[in-house]
Length: 102
Length: 182
Image (cartoon, rainbow over all chains, first blue to last red; front, side, top):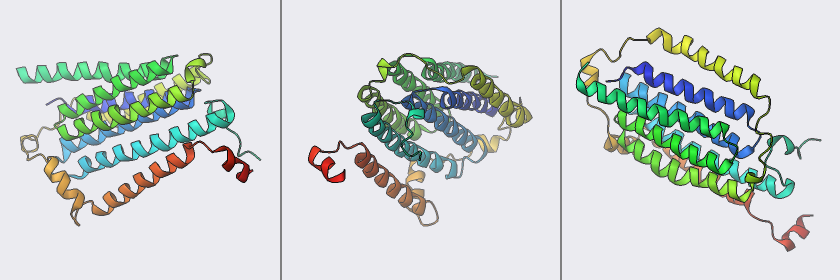
């Protein structure tokens, strides 16, 4: 089999790219897309460790399924908030959504 | 190194190019609609990793849920918010963030991956040939009381609540309703 560290390296690279996107993109939709990249990096890590270290247990496998569900919920709520803010502000830039500021 | 290993490594290289190339496309593209296409490419590469890691059920879930549902949701959001028209100013402080991301990558490499560099796990053939848990075991674990039945119910409730919340947040407020609220 392919050595484990190759998967971990890809996962680390994907996570770093996602971090860059979250920190620097100005568009809210692009920020959420970068969050999805980070969640996928975590999933690769979970599955790689599961397959290489504890393939007879179900934990890593099941956790990945839960992460996918959480990602779906996060994307739905995040995009709903962005669309709602866009309706009132005509903008998808997170910095301009400051209605809660006193 | 036998022949199978070479094919596996070739597949790994292809999926790496797809995944990381798609991810770079997501964070660099100006046109966000293309960004969603790049996101689909990247997610597809991750599905390939699941196949390599002998988790075919998760590969199917990845294609169905991520590419089929979440990426389409992003496409809708891009089109509904007319993000295509905002082509100027892609980034906030890009240089500092590139440095930060590269530092994070180096930190992960040095802290986590370097200690197991070239150890070529799993060295124990018993682990390689061990009975891998499959989709049937996942299904049983999700509903057994020794397994994940509580997290399963909680995550189901969370997903339902999130979907209802998303509909409530994104729903267009009717004109007569608006008068009542204001």
